[in-house]
Length: 118
Picture 1 (tube, rainbow, N blue to C red):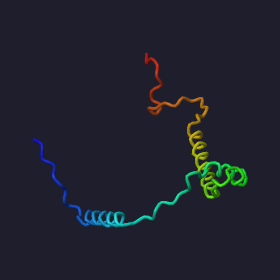
Picture 2: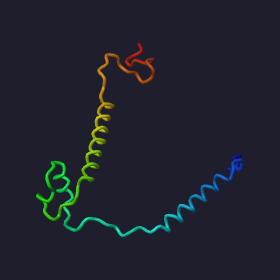
Picture 3: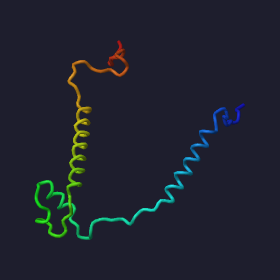
Picture 4: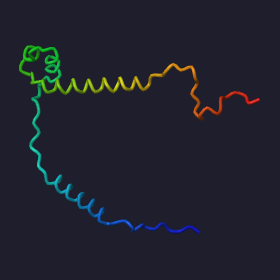
């Protein structure tokens, strides 16, 4: 005969109550916060062209005129992301590279070499 699952009550309810209290406090803080109006670039802002101009040390106003935006902050973030992605790609290639080994790797610890046993 099977037995009905029982709730284990040997643990302390203090940790559970603390988690619920933390959830309530954080919920109240996040619901009560007010954010300022979003500020962005104008309708015709040429962010990509300004970033390209900053990469080649060209004055963005020469390429895009009044639609230029200061792109130095974007340029630093762009280069850091490019370096991180390049490092990830190099790591993936290094992990995927197979070593040229003469010895065959056997998954069962080397006890079975395949073929007929006769």
